[in-house]
Structure formats: structure tokens, C-alpha cells
Length: 432
Image (cartoon, rainbow, N blue to C red; front, top):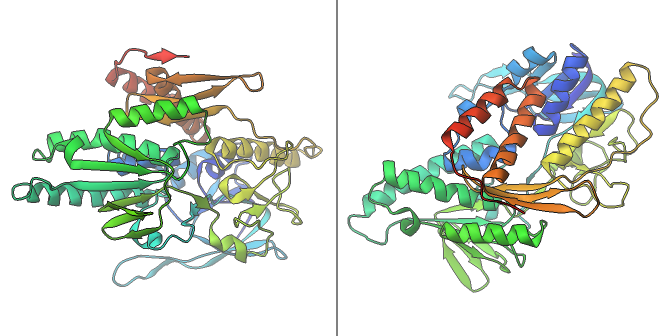
């Protein structure tokens, strides 16, 4: 099996590149992924909280391949033979008692290869972190959190008759966007659970949410005004926020940070990421974090025709700074490589201008009605603070733009936006 361009990883950047290239070069692009469905990663906190149905939101890779002109290979990438220009895709088994092989191990040849496998959790050697926490890296992680939460709520509700202190203690480690968004979404969802399924529980009293952050403030990479607004919103939602604290150990029933032990039946790790370990075994250059070392054109250093994008690529911009592992960076890199491959197809000169990351600001979701963030202006250093319903609309629009990129149409996005506007009639709050 051979494809002109093989893209490994169906996250935001890899999938957008596959869809856009497939529409321009039908039959010449293959996407490889170990899962059958794609979900926009910033939505995983909503899946975990139970406010988003993964079966409604998920997009089938096979459906997208059919509609966008690329082929889909189901399975994990196991190895790379850069001399023979081929990759090995692992076998897929039925996963039942017999565990029969559904798809055998395969070799796929390529002219050009793009590795876009994202990132995984970095536990920084904290004892018990891998065993006793859930990280929201994939759909199955979010589903595991949701189902575990429902079981804990059921048990707490049953115990309430005999123990007035019965409840659920959730600890979220990491005050970045993932941790903050999950805390807010979980508080909103807990009110629904308490009202419609677990009447004995009072959301703010019995579903206790604690957010631990090692830095002096949450959302440390963002402007201080955004961080302060986010902290205020969390306080309004009865989320306990502890900053300047370092987690030293995690057990099945609690999180230790220095001399304090926080009771916890459910722990989320959102304190750091790293590149997947298997990248170090491919014979390609990697940096200390394990990410692939790429040049300013996103090509893996020393390997012609092999590229990387997104969280798994260590790219230094023209300003000498590392490109941050953010969704907007992966989106921009996908567009950059799209131009690279179209130039190759048309026998045009290669790009001379290096990839340059452009920061358009950040938005953080706080449930279904509000968001907070900063938008970068066209003048260097200029930014606007946004919050409330306006920021929420902007946050939703990012999701719709991703859908447009992979579906090639705005129809689904327009319908989703219309439904959102009908459901939410909250007035505008503030625009600074």
C-alpha cells in the first residue's frame, strides 16, 4: 500500500490538513489514526462533565475521508523505515473474549510523511499520578471521567440518608485552560445532576471541587486581567482554588501537596504535557521533551519529506521563541503545510518564508453561557479583554471554524450557532 502523502494523527491539525489536501488532491492523501472518530480536543472537558454527548459531536474519519477525497487507515503507527519511506501500522483486534484480528499489521509507503500525533500527559515523576488520575487527552478519558462521576454521585446519594457529610470530592491538578474549563463546566453540570438525578445532593455543598495550581495564579500564560476574571468566576461557582502549591503524591483517596492532604475520589491531571514516547524510537531527532526537532519549514531536521506539526513538533519561530503547544498553532501549521504540498504538486518553487506563529489571543470557556479571554490586535502588544456572552460566542465560533475546515461547509456550523443563540438569551455583559 502506498500514498503520496501520509498524515499520522487525526487531531485538529492533522485532520484539517488531510481534509483540505484531500479536496485539492483526491486519492493522493492518507490519514492514519488509532481511533475511528474525531472530537475537537477543547470540547473534552464538556464530554467529561456530561454537558456534551460524544456520540452527537464525534466525526467519523471514514465519513470524512469519503466526503473529502482522502483515504483512512485505522490503527496506531508502530515504526518508521525512513530509508524505504514506509511506516508500520499496528493490527486492530476485536477487543472481545476471542480478541480476533480485524485488521492485520500493515506497511504503508509514502512520498511525504506528516506526523501530527499530539501530546500525552507529563506526570513529572509525581508518585501515584499515572495510577490514580484521569487526563483529558482523548474521548475515552473524558467518558471514563463522566461514568466514574456518575457512579460516585449514585453512591453519595445512597449514603446521604445515613451520613449528612456524604458527597463527592473532585480535585483538578493544573490551573491551565483545561483545568479551569473543567472546573467551571463540572460545577454547571453538578447543578443539573443534583436537580434531575440526585435530589438528595446539593451541588455546591456536596459536590466539592478543588483546583490546585503550582504557579502564583491560574492561567499563568495569559494576561493577568484574564486570570483575575477567571478566578472570580470560579469563586462565584464555589470552586476552591489553591495556587503556589506543588502536588507531591497522589493516592486512591487523596492528593498530597506539601503538608496538606486534599480528600479526593476523582482526580484529574491537567498539569503538563509531553510528546508521545514512541517518537523517540523512530530514528528521528527529538528534543528533551521528546518532541520531534523540526526546522522553520516544519520539516524534521535531516530528513527530507518528513514533517511534523502540532504538540509533537518542537519548532523555533523566527523570533527565537518556541511555538507554544496550542490548537491555533496546529491550525496555522496545517495551513502552512497545505501550501507546501500544493506548491510541490504544481511544480512551484518551495516556500522561502518560514512558518511564523501568530497569537490571536485566548478564550476560556466557563460553561454554556459565558467565556473570558483576550484577543490580540493587529498592532504588536495590543490586546482586548473580553468576557460574558460576547466571549462565549467567539469561543463557539472557533469550534465552528474547525468544523468548516474539516467538513468544507458552514452549514453544520450555522445550524449549531442558531441552536446556541435560541437556547441562550443572556444579555451582553462587557467588552473592554
